[in-house]
Image (cartoon, rainbow, N blue to C red):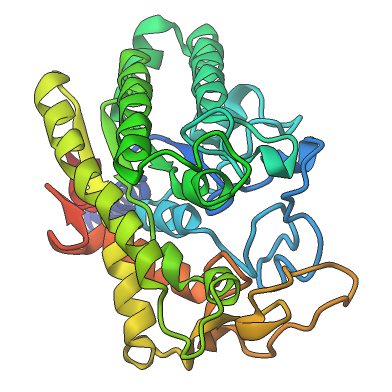
Length: 362
């Protein structure tokens, strides 16, 4: 009898361990990230780039310190990755991002990058979206050489592909008075961007991606930089800028719906970053924030005039959890947690036609 009980205990223990192992498995095998400084995790560290986040106080609340993230802590894709159960994905340009280290994903994101190639030229070197897509193809080739073409194709089709792109096409292109695009009618620039963006998404699909999240452009008229540049006296969002952003987003959503109908086997989720962040900015106390319209780190009106410079050149707030914005442009870790959780588990106002969790479980 004692032997039987012992055997039963061993079997039960093995079953519990197996269940725990199954539960600890990530919802998708990997995540591949495209984007700009909102999700750059260190690619710009390896470029002759003005836009860099690899010096303190960036990363002050991140376990690894100043890695190149433009935040005091995590990016929104870091948060989503945690919810999925994945480790932090490495930047493509990190010398160690080779071999088995890329099997759970890679980030190609680059500060100042945009949909248009010329976007972000005022920040010197950056990785354009087309170049990021080319690098995705390189990663797929490397994975294929490790696993074989069939297994690599399966991994890519089951992985999450996240794209956060478009903000710089306005901030560091259309809104700048010296750019080629500046004098175009808003509708012409919007349609040009969407035409290019559609081709880029189709190329990512051609390379094998099937689970794709596309974030819309956030409330650019509400960031501290805009409040400074447009001389806000009340701290309220700059409505002409907001109207342009909403116009782009209103056209982006049906474009993604159309692509969903045209690309067999693909599901493209529209991540409504604009809606989520306007909710946080308009009702900061509802989310535990005290300051919804000023940066924690910076200087000038709303801390939106001077960026978060290294070496103590500007001051930063002692409690980052009370601020929506880390600097003139980027959210804090705490704000990214709100955004990530709502994209992951939110309703149709936050992500459509399904949320990120549901996409991962397809």
